[in-house]
Length: 422
Image 1 (cartoon, rainbow, N blue to C red):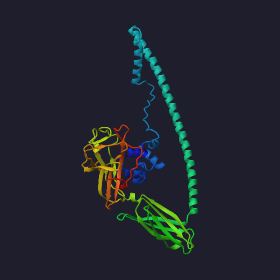
Image 2: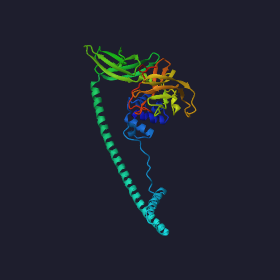
Image 3: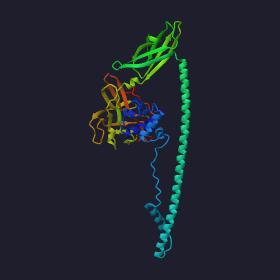
Image 4: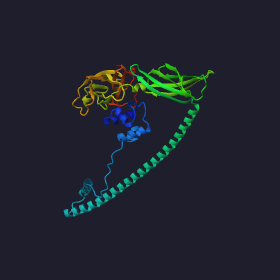
């Protein structure tokens, strides 16, 4: 199981949407989506926050250790339990059965004496073993304390090295900067036209009378928009730039001096503006994990053991400034190609406590699966401006036996509609 799959599993066990988990951690819903799709790893502090929220260790989230077992060691009460007494009686009974017939009264005295001896031996062994486990536990605690101290020292050293590196980087940047001061700001977005408008300014470090300052915006689609800066007070040049809204936008400034020298400096980059502007829904429950197939490599609805695999649950709540939905379609996809649309339906009686969800039901189907096939539910969303995006749910593949569905170790499924067939 990957890191993303473990995060998704624990999030669903807590009944949280990706956006709700992001709110608790102080990150965007897109960050949660990237973690769960294994296209990005959480930072160290976010991994620690996730481990505290889910009640698991960071090692478990990273897949380097198993989940801790509950402590089931018996307390040192100083007395034998009923089970232990029965074990002693059974040992003595078997011993007596192997002896020649003797006086019953003598046998009873022997039994009591034997039981006492065995009980004493059992107690001695039990407490010796228990004491050994206590010593091992103390040694384990000392080891953990030592390991924590080493980790703290390592972290301190790395922090100091990182601080020095950052300072050196800042000094080098300062020496190489062409600007004495600059700033960029996303002024506004026009989602109907799918455009972003930025305000920028820059003060050249070396000012020459008659110099020209040009600002540029590159949205990664091949076209670069330019605008001449207007000179204001204190040699400050400023302008506005507009471009098509994408997920990677870079702003830069160029200084053209009277002698023909041209120098350019990158000012800022803006990531995920387009994705963050799209609507989103959370596919909270899809009961395909470890679903038994009717026969190897054949997925059937209705399922032979669990009819709930027919239903897809969608959290329709929209948060933030994302535009309203004008259309939503939910379907089952194989290798990102549509298998069948699911139709809206009433909440089934078998689902309790899911009143705020919208339910969709898949029709009866028989779907052959090969070992390389990837199966998932996805919601196709169209917003009020006619823009379309895909919200994929968890992905599934056949296990080694081809009799159950399980999670893939690595999968790359994005929300770009051009990568889907529907």
